[in-house]
Amino acid sequence: MNTIKQAITIIGLVLPAAASAASWTCEHNRLIREVSIDSAGENTVPCSVNYTKITEGVGMQQLWSAENEAGYCEARAEEFIAKLESWGWNCSRDPEPVDTGESESTPME
Image 1 (cartoon, rainbow, N blue to C red):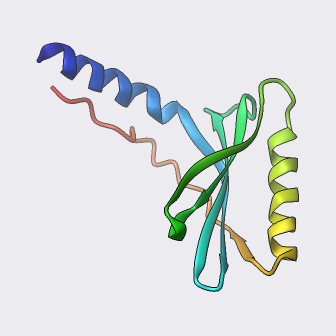
Image 2 (cartoon, one colour):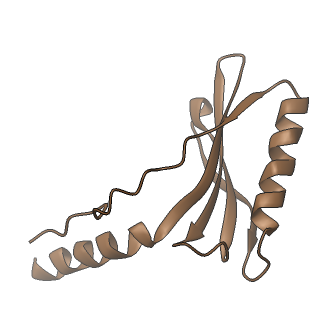
């Protein structure tokens, strides 16, 4: 049982390091989709551009990723958003998360 608690604590400490750098919510005909750029901490790379069809029950798909090229994920995401909008989707950038200085997880004891 102690091993499970330790694993949960480690996962809780590791997961907040991956943060969404930017995200957009897109709507069309009552469908909602999300495009997000995820990166580690304050670095822009490594990064990934992810796409989720929220109302259709389709899980997150990774569209692009980069290990070293700064700006790659941002450019791909913006191009994809423009493509969605050309197909009739209404996309808006989500507000940036506010850093309150508090940890996003609380370790279990």
